[in-house]
Length: 156
Image (cartoon, rainbow, N blue to C red):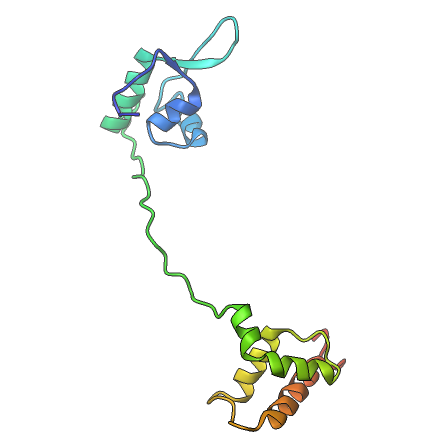
C-alpha cells in the first residue's frame, strides 16, 4: 500500500503496517504518539477511519506525536547478507572416512560417528594422513576415540 493511500476503515494491525511498525510497538505508542482508535458500537472492535489514518501517517512523516513531543522511529531494516560459516557436510565426511569408520566399528566402537572420526584424524594428523598406512591410522584413531570415551573421562 502506498504511504498516503487510505481505506474507509482499517484494523489496528493494518494501521501499524501502514506506518511501518509492529503491532506491539504501535500499541505502546497509542495515546501518546498516535491517536486512540474509534470503536464500533455493535462489534466493539477498534478501527481507524480515514481521518485517523491520515493523522497517523502524518505523525510518522513528521516524527511529531499527537502530544506534540518529537519521536524518533527506527528505519526499516535492510536484509543484509550475513556471511555464513561454511562447514564440511557430514555426508562428505562419511565418504572421506568410510573405510576407516567401518574398520573402527569392526574393532568394537559401534557408536562412532563420521564427525568424531574426522575430528580425531584432524587432531592426530594435522598435516594430513600418511599414505599407505591405513592400518596404523585406524589403530591410532581407534585408541584416540577409546581414550576419549573411557569410563574415567565420562562425566568430566
